[in-house]
Image (cartoon, rainbow, N blue to C red; front, side):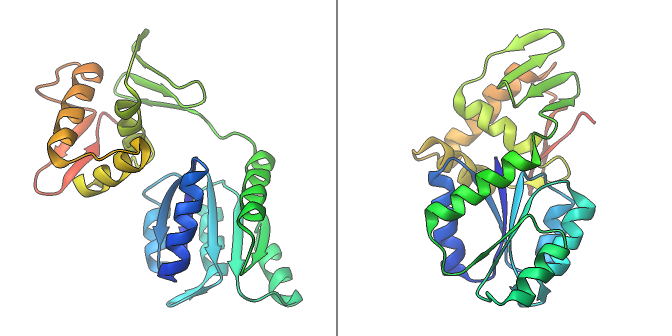
Length: 223
């Protein structure tokens, strides 16, 4: 599950990210309304945690854009617990509202409740003859199932969850290190990409699914 965290306070964002990752979530953060807007249209998420007070706008506007871009639950985070803010947030389409400071267990419980209420989104992704079923954790090339290691699967999911984005090597290193709980360096990342291409590409020497963008990183091709 991918959580979209829109929070400008670095310390709060750091602590929230650690909490969410410890619970098995992947976290993508935006610090501003502008950055949130860019990521909303480039990546897919399962739930959004949105701070109402942002340096270049407010979370209400972000909530409106989330509703346009993706069908996911939205939980507002705010230091303001007055009734007017609560009502405004819910009227804007938020699924829940939690006041800072909050108890970690309460936040996690509310996130899981919102995800259950929202129901499962489409769990099947298809691209270039490759089918990824995230609900069952299976990957197929045509009709044949492909068996990936945990890190290879996680690497593939980074691309599947960001179909419109150029993925930098730095981001891949961060995602894999976080998921594996072990150090993944630049050399081993190259090895993982090579192994994954050998399993999912028709011609690994001329990849069409995980495409190299010179000087920038990689992107998902095969569309």
